[in-house]
Image (tube, rainbow, N blue to C red; front, side, top):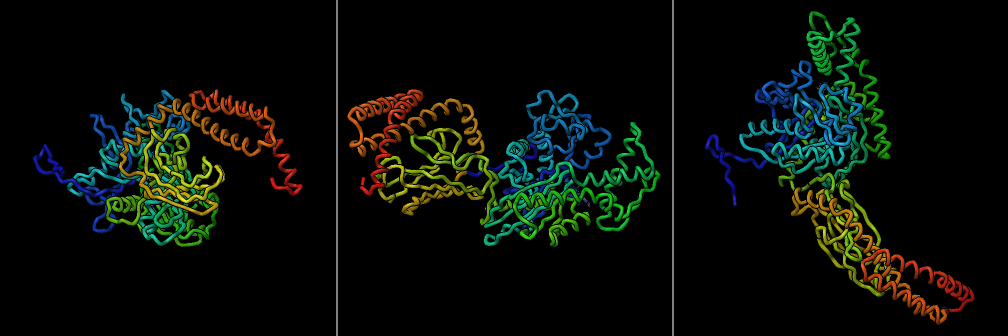
Length: 618
Ligand code: ADP
Ligand code: MG
């Protein structure tokens, strides 16, 4: 069934676009891009000039919300009503931000230090999610105006180091802005895609993505193989960026002229003018050798050489981070195939030159560095739209993946929030003598019992050579690719028989269902744990019963009548206990049996060893 949207205010048919857009939700600037005729393109403002939307939200007198360039003017005049750098607050508690409060010109609420931060504007409180949603709404309007159609699907980028809470907050912000966030992808991954790295399924490479923005710096080392991006390491400084370059220039001019800011309107205005002039100087010096302007009748000059000297220590700090990231990834500069430059501040020639010198190779800088992340997100979005079937990326697995073990227990092999792609395995064995088949049932979810989780599929490993229980070594491997496709392999290592299946871990499950599964697992955690420990006790008891029976039949000749009777009596008590639901009584019965049979087992073993040494067959 097709739905035809009608705009009620105009009475016209409303065009809904199928385009999935790519969004770079930045600390300093945000932008939206999409694929037009096979080429990623950032969407500009109405004047067709600027694609960057400053990530600033201003609350005007009449409660109106102003976002972007128009909000910037209020940064110095009305700092308490003008919110910037909200990305820094995403998924953070007040405690996380405590030591940084002075960085923000606005009020961060501290009523409960454990809970997530809120921003106070006048007499209202806003969460970072709501504030980010305001920026996203502005971007949504921008692209809808451009496409003359409504847009509802997006891919949003986040730094590689963002944790699950921060990624979730970003997703929620998208939802609040009326966007269906199909994927959250890492900024360095997006930047690589913009350069076409990762689009060739046969190529493999290791790259460094150097991202110097307005207020943050990060370096990520990625390994890309078969279109799968793996983050090997990240490093950086969340309080180092182009704004610090501006500040260094302001400080330099202030000292030169002996300026002092007065704590009044005029002083503020002068400070703001000086800061803007400094940014102007910095940008100019990216392409020229000197700069000059007048601020309030003062001449402010700066040469490229002077500028380089001012920022040298800051650039040096980023290089130290690069070295650390290489070290963490256990690589050297020679292992790096390409270096990708991201962020407006990488336009500064000294930055580019220093990074190229460190890595010993020219850097990738042809794509506009402040658009490159959004452009890459648009490429990823296009892949998701099904226009490029080759690659798909998934950042983390939302739910744990595992198999059913004895008694219906869930044995997690890949825990939730594992980075994707991911590979993990574990060894199992049989529980019955002569067992030749093993059922491998694959489940997804957080509950302890598989019956409460989602079944993804099952298969049977057949042809296990008959062996006593516990002897076969069956290795189960989970290989989850970037597409959310899970391959489960089972292999009996002694005989080499193997079997595998592929299942789609994200197929047919919505965000809401995933959220519900998580909530259920938290609410039932205590009860689940009790059931789990009962089942585990039962499993252990069954194994012990099995070996006790074996022990009796194999060693009857070495045991006294009394010992045999007593052992049988204790195994019977244990068998009865396993049929009840009290794990403590099972454990007690196990202890009793063990205590009695241990010395017997030692004695029997000694006899066996002696006989073996004297050459007799047992
Ligand atoms: P973020 O990722 O933090 O949102 P951006 O990548 O948009 O930030 O980078 C913004 C920074 O880039 C600002 O500090 C800005 O002054 C700086 N910048 C933009 N253009 C230039 C340029 N031509 N030369 C030097 N710095 C620039
Ligand atoms: Mg950025």
